[in-house]
Length: 278
Ligand SMILES: N[C@H](CCC[C@H](N)C(=O)O)C(=O)O
Image (tube, rainbow, N blue to C red; front, side, top):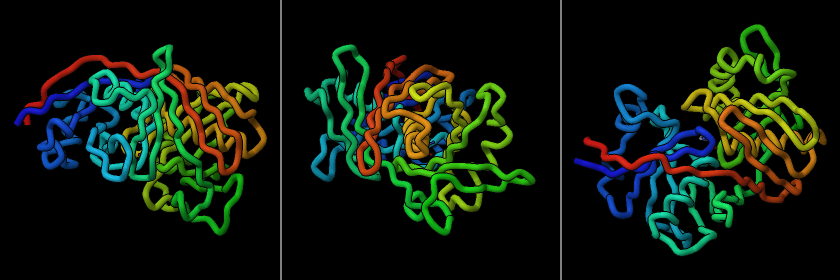
């Protein structure tokens, strides 16, 4: 079997996008073992996540499915949402500039801006531990989290997918490689978690690194940027509009506060087209 794919990235967080509307056989072919093999940067194509474009089922324009490099299907991907919008727009699968995209955790609405960037309403963040999911007696701004012999102070939030965010003094010295995997697989996160490391530069500017669930440290993480900003705003450490600088580039995040949606704006780039031989 052959499948056409498009290689894309959002600030270096890289994806392959597969149109399962014109290639319905993709849905049965892409099991977790195949996704893992394709994700390998030597034996496969190489990507952080695989994105699938499916026909809508619940009144949206499209359905959007996301698989991490480890083969696990997940609920949300922010950089991927911008690339998804760019993909369906550039292939004339829609003539809309604001697209209603069904995800495992509700509808998100990317808009292709005049300057070519993509803005996405990423939905309302959820801080309730049970919804993240995260084991904690009650909702709090921060929680102690013990890994090996060290107690961390984290915030926890869901952007549809789970995030644990901690503040560090120097992002370049942050223990992402050593602590990231321990946080990712911590028992208090029964579905594992994305581990964010945030350095606050000032109330409108942070630097961020994310050890992603199922992918490891990526050059950028869209939901991670949203999670870090809303946790910072909830702690009154940030204003409502924040520039998030990551290794792959910058995102602009806006949040008006509790019960409001988070807005993310940034680029989406098409790199090449290819054919998978399964
Ligand atoms: N690793 C994430 C999915 C991809 C998120 C990230 N690439 C983004 O841009 O939001 C998870 O397991 O929840």
